[in-house]
Length: 384
Image 1: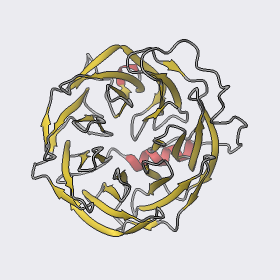
Image 2: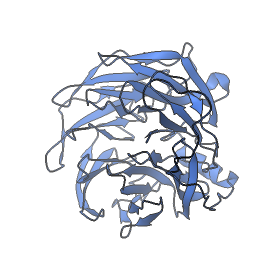
Image 3: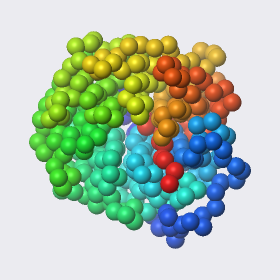
């Protein structure tokens, strides 16, 4: 299990408190200046990187083909952080920190800079964090064991509030649970790591969760970071310690059904995947292999392996751990640690070819200064 809980304990011991002073900047301030230098190509978007054992979040302004520019400011978002995600509209960033245990919201201004809006303490390790498509509701899972889910509503000012009480997944061995939300916002899916299962809940009209509807085996050990096709018909989840990715179809009422295909082989320790906006291709980074596994998604939900995308010229890195697609789906961004540079995380860009294969952009290999790749360490927020 990659000594996850041990790492969190060490991070907790080393942590310092994150401040909660709210800055005066407006997230919609038209006067906010752009980052230094010109950004060319498609509409700029923002990338936010962190490392599991580094306290800061680092931002970059990017396009599909243009230069990558650093965003001013590196807020201390905490150590031992697995979940980080942006609202689909690109206006806010949410971070669940392991040390100090806290849930934080940041406004993203027009230049991509982060401004703290709220920080509240948590009672257990945050693991999964995802938004509904309308950017108004999100769900947080907590706990290495005895996992539970809390629903929250996010206001237009970036401050959040709970929707009802937290819901237990039901078993003590439910833990390290990560999330995916159906595009129609009617179902929530949870990968429960220790039990090798995918769970389904109904999302009620007020954003709260209904009772557990389904438990289904992923056919492998350590399921983590499920992803759903944009049409809501298929879901895929890497089995981290089995080195496979499992595929399911989603029926009209949200029910999960195996596609009938055995989990497909990946590299070692597959992690945070991404699906193209057209729903035709799936990319799975591998924490302990120097390549990204690429797949074509068939109409029936099964997968067809494409050529792997090398992320390194040598055997020790960069090793891709987390990937995110640009809004156009034409560029894939990868973040993973490079043992050749002491374990710091390296940001890379790959171009998505018409046939679904990936072409590495060798001009982009940025040492982010963050260390240890574990969790959702790269987040894309569309520009606005």
